Image (cartoon, rainbow, N blue to C red):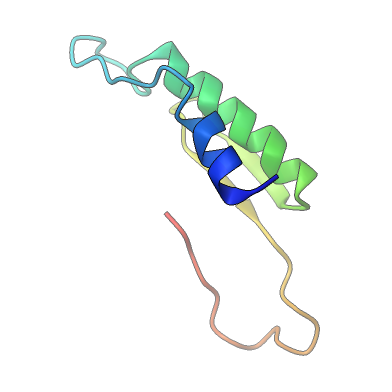
Length: 76
């Protein structure tokens, strides 16, 4: 799938924040998107994929062989 196809898929989710919700994530659509992203991460080979009830999604990719000692990169 091309990058713009992924982008168009991601923006199709209704993720508008609800300031009156009193919870995180503030809309159900945000959690639905996070679940879809978690499945995609697993399919792409991410390890330790975790989706917290607050909607925080994290995972890791193993280092390239022979580059295990270089600094890690985090994307937020």
